[in-house]
Length: 307
Image (tube, rainbow, N blue to C red; front, side, top):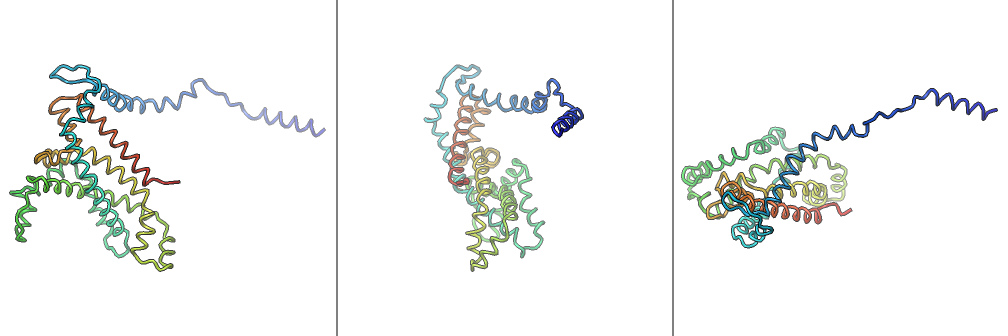
């Protein structure tokens, strides 16, 4: 009897529950919403990447192009200017980027200190250089560091220090470029580090203080390990940005003097849009992409989460 009642109840419940009817084309609906973004990505990203690789296999002779295979890539290995640009970019990457990130970490710690007054105003002041356009701040530094009439040399003269040939000497031109990059990007990275510091649990600091750790040991054993994911992020971003560096050397020094500030990005631009050798410029672009990918893998290997 109970079995009959349960069967009737089940039948009634199933009769009351409406059947879900799948309309034709519902499986394709999500893809239709994504289609515009995919189309834009294919037209403005995938197509230029593929066309650039195809272009790198051609040699440009005036207005004519002839298929050259891997000749452009072989030319890279024999091109002294390419190796000069690579060396200059590597110097900036090895010297300026670690210095900038170290300053940014110090600023982030200072920004989070309870002893600092007007913290919001100071943070804004250090972040504002990032809002400045690349060309605008390049022109600004070119005016400030002008060896003859620059404001920096004027202040140095007031202090009795001889004028510095900022943009006319190979060493000082590199230093000037490093100063400009550090001024522009340090505050941006400091804000990223600060956001991570504010997310670190205070219990770790309290436990370290109870164990007798001073400020330096708390920074070394609590702050730095906690910043590790953000250090990796900023290092990868700074590496990519440095290897693609173009605006600052173009505006400040145009690669001079004596190619001392010629970067890979600037050398690529010169070959493509000054000499119209688009095949060789495309080969440089792909070599640059390989270098960026290799350095990214190395950085993730040594700084990534081992788990």
